[in-house]
Amino acid sequence: MGDDHAGRVLETIREFANIGAGSAATALSSLLDLELMNEVTACSILPLANVTDWLGGPEQVVAGSYTQLCGDLKSGILVILPEHSAKTLLEHLTKEEVDFSNLTNIQRSALKEVGNICLCWYLIAVSKMVNIDMIPSPPDATVDLLGAVLDMPLATLGAKVDTVLAVHTCFKGIDREFEGYFLMLPEESTLRLILDRMGEPKG
Amino acid sequence: MTELRAVGIGQIIIVRAPEPLACIGLGSCVAVIMYDPVTKLGGIVHVLLPKAPTNNPDNPEKYADTGTKKLLQEMLTRGARKERIIAKLVGGAQMFPGMNLYVKDIGKANCAEVWRVLHELRVKVVAEDIEGSRGRSAFLDTNTGRVTIKSAFADKRII
Image (cartoon, rainbow over all chains, first blue to last red; front, side, top):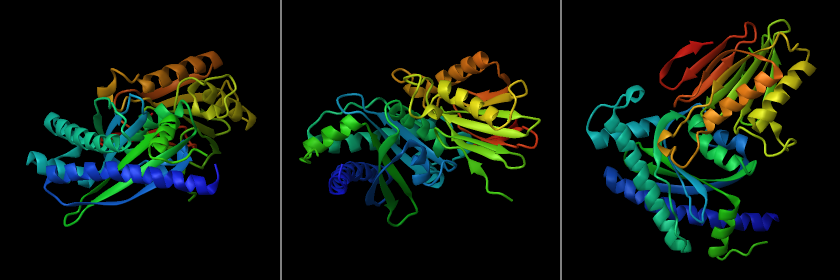
């Protein structure tokens, strides 16, 4: 793959992820009654072992919702919120104090539901754009160390490859401190299909 | 003080006392920790998946079977003796139990494979903190062989 071609591939994927994340952020915005702004999507092709460092290190505590596409397209998709943002979100939704070391069932369920909504809106937008049906598995959510949260998505890819394309779209609250990101980890065949549908010549 | 070295996914690092060694943010991955109390050599392999696709994969450190074998081999090359080596296991959690209908429990499979290989290699497993649904970080003190385990919302444990 030449540098020019690699650059175009990343550009195309960036556009794809921007559309998805934009749609998900709009949904999250209305759910939270909070204005959110999407930052530019960052893509990087990197060894499995470096993914968590690229995202800021494996030791951070985050809330992560995860779904896996299981139709023609195969990809892990996650919504990751740093601890303080997840707390803001839960307190807003449940109107009660949140103790992260001891989440109640309702709080866990709310976290899952928010992940579910975001991930679905992400998929609806990108699926329309490339005209491919995408089937997500029911998502699950957890609050833990980032390294631990990413193990399963990385293991799913790691069975086939050592290098992954990680696509990261950050969102931030405009007038309130709130941030997080979407992370897409597509399989190689999926990447080719997306590029094909988006008119990128295969080189 | 020396900087704390952390073993990433699919890596092996071996150090000698007093240098400490860590493995941060283990979910379904397993840290196989080996320690020789006489030479005070400590080594960790951070495995992602249970079984290597072939006997001779490009990156044996990524898999429980080939990674565990390679760690032992490298410990021996560095001067550790097999009859003295003790092993401790950390990790192998199921981070998203709600997905267990269509995604297998990789953490459990990783642990089972490490156990099988260590048994075959006749390396003693003296302690473990595995499975469940919590992430863990492991810190090896090469002066004593003790491993401190930290989780996001639990008290420290020492094994």
